[in-house]
Length: 324
Image (cartoon, rainbow, N blue to C red; front, side, top):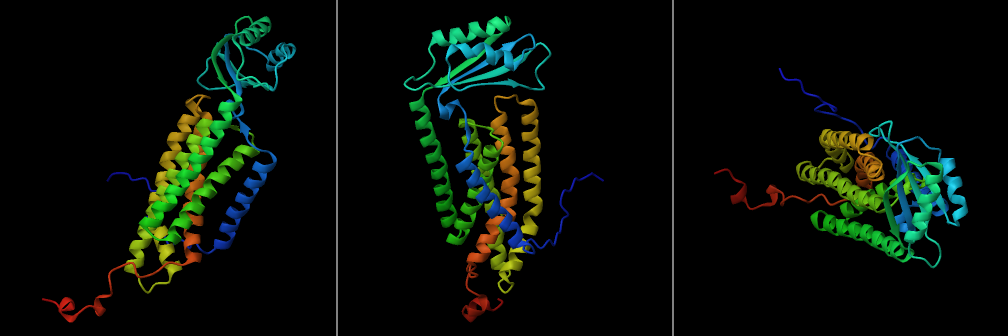
């Protein structure tokens, strides 16, 4: 007999609405706190949005971040941030740092002469240092990127709203959009709380989260519509509980398998994609929660019509209801 791994039993009878006000209240508070964090602490914008130059240095010998910072103090640079990059894939002979230098007013990017001066200053404290990559973005370009990123998220949300409206009903559309707004806000709030770098790769992760979350929600909505046709007299709350229990195994299995792949990327993928992967991993868990505890609650409170199926056979002419 083959072994089958089951994260969820074949038949569950969990009452997901037993603590509906508590679970939805937690989501509402988390969203409100995320907005407060975004307004007070803001986001730790990367060079993509802030403007400036990012230099990735590599050295065969260990270094002190304080020594690097002290070496650059006399160059008249603004907003210098130096962080050592740790990665399990690095060997003992590879020591990596990221030097972020904010753009100065009236300049688009650092000149080759300024970059050369930075390299010369760092070589004084670490002769083995080399510049593996140099990326520059001007303030005007970064402002355009912020606008484009906002438009991309809004356009994706509007498209999802329109699709769900056509596919189901307006109650489902509102529930789905509230769920994805919940996912995006909480993800951004955590990035703000821990001041994680927020750049274009994070925007890509947010758009991916939108698609992942709404896909999970649509699966539940599809089964809900089928059950509304099947159980016409059953109370709506019971139909929703039945629906979530029937799709729970799929929801959990999809989230776990996706999380396993993302965890491997988070550990072994390197620091270049770490922000993207972390946002995705966070979005998977938040999206799973919103599918179960946010989207369906909105639909329940708004109400939904119960005449999804064809007219009742009892109301059809007798010739269609009689057995041949």
